[in-house]
Image (cartoon, rainbow, N blue to C red; front, side, top):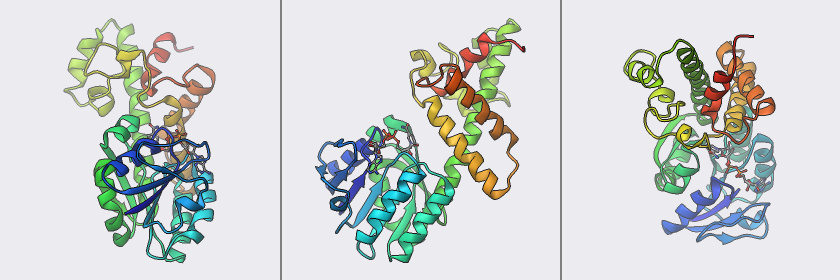
Length: 290
Ligand code: NAD
């Protein structure tokens, strides 16, 4: 397939390289002039959209996605497929899909989980929203860039799944970290805490697979001085999107709201920027109730 790939950042560059390595004819464009292995570099965004069977975007946010979509949709051929893999607000995902469909283009919102390691290794999980036809066209490409793709429903459903998952993750990581900090103060060894909780009803992915306590559980960013992994500022972004969606949908999400406010303080005022989101544990350890 002829594929245009717009946004060759930390995630986009290795995803585009994997498509090229699988034998697709990939042309990439990034405003920063970044490139990817095996990918032809376009000088303009037009050259990465015109005449392509599929255009994939991997961009920072919904405003940039809307801007890029407005530029490329008029250039794309009828029947071509527009796959957005960025994490953006549900409203932007739906608006872009609607514009694409009006122009006779198949649209899929397909945010990912798995981070830069998953992008490089081709092991991402895709959560997709869009029509059955659009998903069918995109699926073989998801199989190259990832290990699992779930068709979640109509346009916007992929973004909805992503932000709901990450709202659970943010709140659960905070609960796990504050419980470790309490256990410390109660004189409970961290290893014992892990042994009990990881096999009891408090278990979770945060505890069992990504334990925030160094030297406990499987290898995680905590064992590497909290280098990300999944950076606290990316968690903050996703929690912001979840609360934006909750507001639009009139959903009551007090835990998500509190998680957002704690990560905001952590990132903006407490040195959390550039650290893994599990570095909430040393943050809680330093604090008392006051
Ligand atoms: P990044 O900032 O490294 O990459 C984004 C790229 O888009 C940059 O290279 C930038 O120059 C380019 N860009 C910006 N405006 C553009 C435009 N108008 N036209 C063309 N290119 C443009 O970010 P990333 O880490 O690659 O993340 C991309 C998306 O994936 C984000 O939405 C992020 O939330 C999501 N995501 C990231 C991770 C992660 O671990 N990094 C994990 C899951 C999802």
